[in-house]
Length: 440
Ligand code: UDP
Image (cartoon, rainbow, N blue to C red; front, side, top):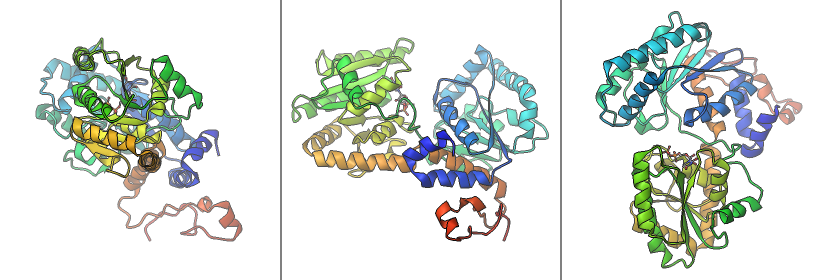
């Protein structure tokens, strides 16, 4: 086994890695191409950075292609992004033309690879028209939409839909994000990478050190929210909750960690509102961190006693997953993907108001055993459901489903899938044969 697979095995245990090898075994010889619009920055690139090498290690040929465009192209796709998430935008005809021409140029460049691949995964709307620009394609094409399409601005969706209708399947992050399309749709929730800087284990002294560097006392109670200064993340509501909870939790500190808001006028406005609400309270720490402060955020999540994500609207809520993975009780807003992560009293708490959040903060600080139990359950819940190994397993499963969808039964057994100890005991693999998987 390779070092990378072994590193994941150390985190998730041998079974999930075995499952991956089993699924990959029957995809041997198949080739996969992922296409998106940026090599770095943004959630999609972050996922592909890990997913591609991990797929490769499993013996599947995989390539990652990035389409190239000029400023007008990105202006157009940014408008799509806003429109698809519900903002009423109008995209001028001229920009639509740039969008289509840019895709045509990229299709020329990528033609051979895309024609030959067994599976092509197109991420988000930027490269969506490629499908119609590659005649004689050999493989199955999947549109992987990372955007919340639940309430799109319809003229934008109608336009994008024209380009994605012909795909063999599409994948959405949550059932509520999907729209009706004339092909199979799969739901694959996001995941985090346990080996990334944001989530890896840290030396025990580091979280305390990072807290102290930022003027936070690691020996007093800490509540943390990590998020952009955005009204939907309700940072002012978090300040209110802190004020209420502080009456019952002496020495409580609140840390609001977010990015610098200089390039986002609305962010600057929200930050001003938060500063006003904080009103100079020395126990409210508003941290403006650079975009690559992953390790600092990791440390803050580890030094906090409680993680809050009091969103009023939310896509998935990766900060919730990150907090849970660090064994913290998380209090989240009752919105979007937070609903599939936090179950009251079990993996965390969901709240609908600052008062509700304050109540849960108070309850958790009064009950150390409850904090430990919820934090422990949350970590195991993430281990099983929201790590990148699960994401890859589901990707491979979709490939199988598309490859063998017409079969009554799919046998995913490979001869080497029998663990060594069972093999020694003379146990035959189920299905008994090499490359099983045909119609019985
Ligand atoms: N994040 C960060 N710096 C910040 C704020 C957030 O690195 O100042 C990270 C955070 O740790 C998480 C992601 O950005 O990984 C935010 O994802 P989430 O789904 O929580 O919210 P979004 O910003 O996508 O609405």
